[in-house]
Every structure is written in C-alpha cells, then in structure tokens.
Image 1 (cartoon, one colour):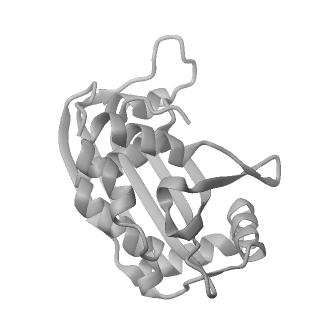
Image 2 (cartoon, helix red, strand yellow; image 1 turned 120 degrees about the vertical axis):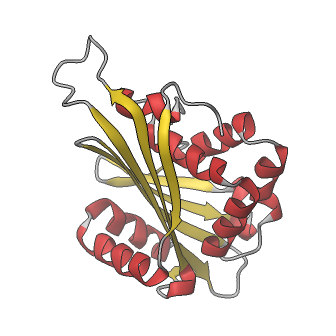
Length: 216
C-alpha cells in the first residue's frame, strides 16, 4: 500500500460476519432514502437483491495513528484532535434472471474522529464485467449516472497497487458481486480496501493524512 503522510501505529483489516452484514444492509436500505432509491433503481433495471449471507460481503479497516491528526490552520471548527479512523465497506449483490448482467449496492463509511463520511453507489456491470461498470448515485433526490467512487477506486488501483491487482477486476469477473469482491481482495491484499477508503475520503483533510487523496 502507498505510504501515509502520518506514521501509523496500528492497522487491522477484518472480514465481517455475513449475517451481521445482511442485517445491517437490510436495516439501512429500509431507513436511508438514498439507499432506498438506489435499491429501487436496481429493481427497475430488472435486478433482484441476493438477500442471503452468500450475497453480501463486508470489510472493516481500522487505523490508529502514532500522532494526533489535526485540522489545517485555515480550517475553523475542525473538531478535536484524533488518532482513530475506521472504514467500513458493505456490498450486496444483485442479479438479473436469464442474464449475465450484475449489479452491486455499495455502502461505504469512514469515521475519522467525530466525523463520518459516507458513500452510496450502485454499480451496474454489463455481462458481469466490472471493468466496464456504470455508476449510479443519488444527487438532489434523484438517481443519476456519475463517475465518482468506483472511478476513483480504479484510478487508485492502477496507480498504487500493481498490475496483478489492477487486472483482477477482469480476472475475477463472472462471479456474483460479493464473490467477485472477495476474489478481488485476495488478489490485491489490503491495497484494495485502502483505495476504497481513499475514494470515500475524497481528499478531505481529516482522512487524507492516512489515505492520501483520491478525488471522486
């Protein structure tokens, strides 16, 4: 993984228990408007969520810095210094009857001190090819096509994680999205989750010292 701008004291990557992930995703889709809209968009496009443990995957990346993360001098009200950052990524698979097309609902959150940044994205992969995936996000209450989180992740992978990892987006194709991500993560190691966190951070000061800058 690329070096951070601040010294890391401890880091831990965890694979979350599928039943916990499934319960958490189900609850969030039911109560968070942007996730509900993306879920309905997927259904409108002919997809059905695989609401079962094998249809989901979740990872958590916890980092403790060796020194305080402080707001830049020109940022007012930046909050108290902190050392702990926690990134969580949840993915639910969507499939389409009699089709190789795949879709995935991405729920990403990055807690840095008292601040939480979230990203909600629907990826649609024609023929199950995530290297050609389209991105959909909610903007001003409407689902719109965007080049955002996934585009930033892909750019980070190509720049920082080596050719084997960058190629895994294609090599791991033809699997349901949860299995595809697991294959992808196995090929990339921690660099995949690091890039996902970098994309979710989106260059904000409170997390770029650890994850650098991946502009959505």
